[in-house]
Image 1 (tube, one colour):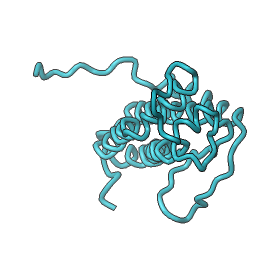
Image 2 (cartoon, helix red, strand yellow):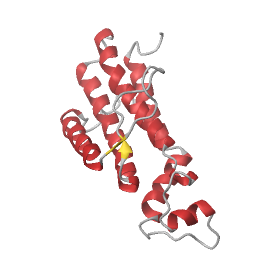
Image 3 (cartoon, one colour):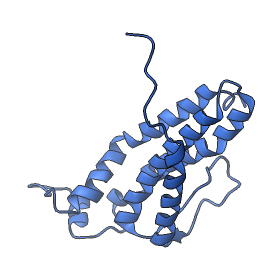
Length: 175
């Protein structure tokens, strides 16, 4: 109840979206699902069984390297910003509409990157555009056709393009 009251709260969660992309598990999967599967990398002299399974094109849920949870954590953080930023903008006079739109554009791009990796690697994935805030919504979401996901991403990115910052403001503090 004390969060989502000013623009600093929004900025904090936007930063956490980037933090999710920096987690070891997220980065490891990006490399494995992308570079390793594309033959740009080799398994090495003694790859783990999980890596061997991916090299054999086994991307079934039974393989821990095919766990999507890190990607959906990032997606949920992005969805949370999209949900709460307009509410914060309505109550914080220091949080302008253009700042809000820029924040939503930023997290829309992060969410699109996550979905790009998921669709490219697994094809049919659940498309979740609302945040999981409480237990009132179903946890299990059916997979969407890749065209549905990609069309949504293109629409989101086209909208975000108009509001994304073209360059970040320069700090007036020389340090």
